[in-house]
Length: 239
Image (cartoon, rainbow, N blue to C red):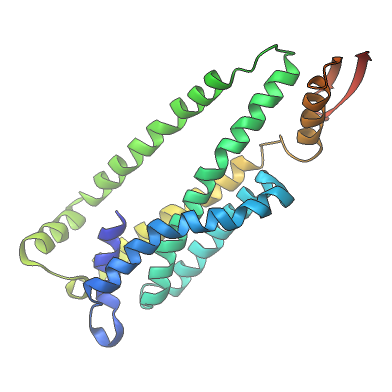
């Protein structure tokens, strides 16, 4: 839906009342697809230093702060609206690219806690996709259901048949589109932060899991008494 919001909001807020040309809108779309990959490259050393948990948490906070800031500024500044459209995609894609690392850590933890001979990587990754993929399909369907409400539907049909740009829409229609564009990421970021705080496989607990796997891979028998609540354990090794 990014082209939809860009067409109705940025075109109606161009400098001097003039809508930006298709070149600017094309550059905006190109940046929204290329910037996430560039950012992930620069995030790699940061992830190695501060951990996946901390980087993902920072992305959630950045998304929340950016959404709140744009909501307070409104849709009168096309530069910030354009920047929000790009950065919102960067934050979302960044989390999606880093999340498999967390799933890999969960696989390692399962191996340690249950003393398995082999990992259940296929099962855990499959379960993760089974739970996450429906959301990626339902989100556009729910968004389209909102856009098909009487007020939205009338404006969409008018713009499609008569070529009405965002500058000719009523202010109430523009406000509704802007709020939908900003409030949804704002609410999602707040919920993500709330649930992300419950993810405990980081810090000392994650280091303990990695140390246990490293000792096991040394070829010596390792028995672990692990306390998942404290994230610590004791080792009994047979040489």
